[in-house]
Image (cartoon, rainbow, N blue to C red; front, side, top):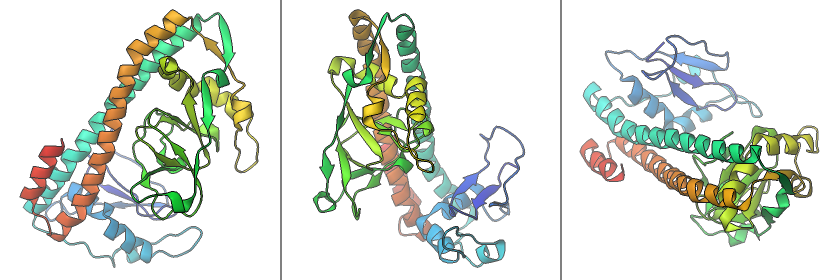
Length: 328
């Protein structure tokens, strides 16, 4: 019910969800790989507990007591051994409100990006529906093969793995750091298209909001013509391209699509005037979404940096409020 928390206790342990006032339904059923936690309303603010259980220290503590190597897990008695510092209810609510303000802004950005993505797709689909000829996808985009060795990766370089790319969205919601990576990665630049070639049916295709490196299971594609960049992004992420890539993937357990195969897909191509109109109308929308994407990732980093300091008392809520107000 609303106010309950759901804690993953088997497999990818440490994932926490809160059933709050925005939940679609009044009641939910959890799997046998999850635990339902009901906070005592007299002592614990549910949103505060959500953030406390989501903190890196808490996740590390839970992972430390997990049993099993390939598929780790833990039970309720083990979870009871993990201590959670509880400030006064008033302090809990204040901490939750500060961190919640950042999450609210992130959610608003993501909703706007979703709307932008839908509008952009609609414009391109409508234009392709009346296209009179087709060209190979390789005529619109080329593969970039700029590989960086681990010793060439500077601290702070953005890293995008398949796990960071959301399914069915044009825009990233998170990224990692290249620090400590042990294998070669592919470099990308802002505006490049990151196409997940491993299990392409997951539809992991996004625009790069900044420079960085990515997994070699991600194809780095660069539009050949800047005046076609909006059309190219939408085409590469379309259901038609994804279905084509999936049908030509090789490998039973880990199917991958090759660039040679992908580049041969025949793209319905609107006339030049229509392509120019799409670029003029859609590209500013996409750039706005890219800006919001970058902002959301920075806000998430701020939230994650404030969380342990607020929980430990190292940072006062009043000081955190100033930082949040400046950010949002």
